[in-house]
Length: 200
Figure 1: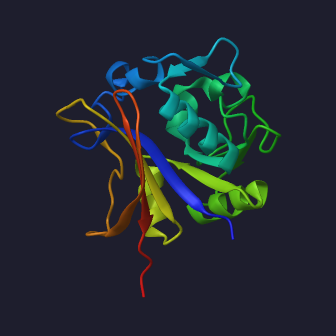
Figure 2 (figure 1 turned 90 degrees about the vertical axis):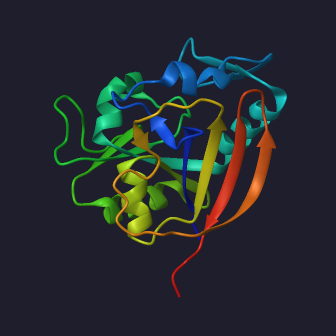
């Protein structure tokens, strides 16, 4: 059974971006504060982290077979220049297919009929590997639909004060998690994993 996970770098006060959808110069410092290089599928983008974080990133990449993101992130990144840095297909949840893009290609699939269909499509693509879901409203929708299995947090020592929560707009609370099932200490970041308790 294909596991569905969500993961994000998060501030100590629970935000994955500031109120202006920024703050990444603080959140993502750990991507470039070490000596171990981890290349990506994006030319010129190489992460330099601690050895522990590098192994964490390699393991994550090897486990992941597809990603699910929202249209806002797709637009903000300009479609990652045509291919996601993790070098896996991306399912984009959207109301309409953006101009100039095919509905379905090797790199991107645009799903216009809801989060459940997006997860189904991503699972079909991922096969025996995991499906990774972007944090924010998409993560909240997947959790509300009962489709989420794990939550991965890259916790960094910064306080943003306000911003976009990991599970923005979550309508079902409280939600209890099991764990942490994994704790990895990096440089300026702690990588955590939690299991989602299923109802019933």
